Amino acid sequence: MADTTPMKIIVDLSKPEGERESIVPLTKEEIRQRELDIANFKAEQEAREAEEAAKEALKVSARQKLVAGEPLTPEEAALLVL
Amino acid sequence: MSAMTLVSTVTVGAGGAANIEWTNIPQTGKDLLILTSLRGTSGANARILPNNNSSNHTWLRLFGTGSSTGRSGPNANASNLQDIPNNPTSTANTFSNNSIYISNYTAAAAKSMLVDSVQENNATAAFQVISAITWNNTAAITSLVLQLDSNNFVQNSSASLYIIS
Image 1: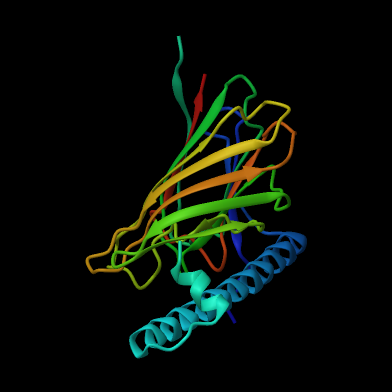
Image 2: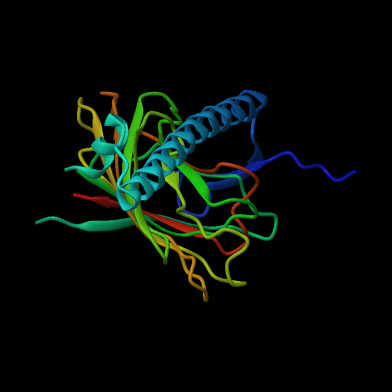
């Protein structure tokens, strides 16, 4: 099975030109931190998308009620009135 | 007299790379500028991590998708380069064009970063992004990690680091 360990390109600017660049595997800790960061980002993104979807649903409902001449809830009115 | 000095250009080779890192950045300048041309093997989210530190990042972005506009944030996570690299569904052999400007990188103050980015795609969907990032850490920036969130930057992705003095 092919090794799929992520690799990183490191440029050490304290070294002379021509000797600066190396390609090495990510450490286990780096991989762990990366996966944790990605999980945190996804959780935050899902929460944000859910909030946006809820807002959009309120907007749709508010528009329909306006057309039908029905009263809006306070949450629907807050979305439409600046 | 101010100067913009190219200190390093990295071009990703055939194996791809998850990270591009600069270490031991000279502390002789005022600001840093990173100009990149990026494409990922999966997804289009990445991060720029001063001193390889993923804590205390806050970012806010305005974006256009090619068919709509929006904003996201403020977000408090380290995936601060969202929709920056070209993703694998974009036209073959195309890369995004990005600029990351870091002010006062040696100052004992929180660091401010400005990201200006466009993806390239011969179709409607291509993100244009402007982001404001704060790394709330007073340490001088001595290293930078440019990392794709998942898998690798593809071959011929590149990143150039400039010191502005």
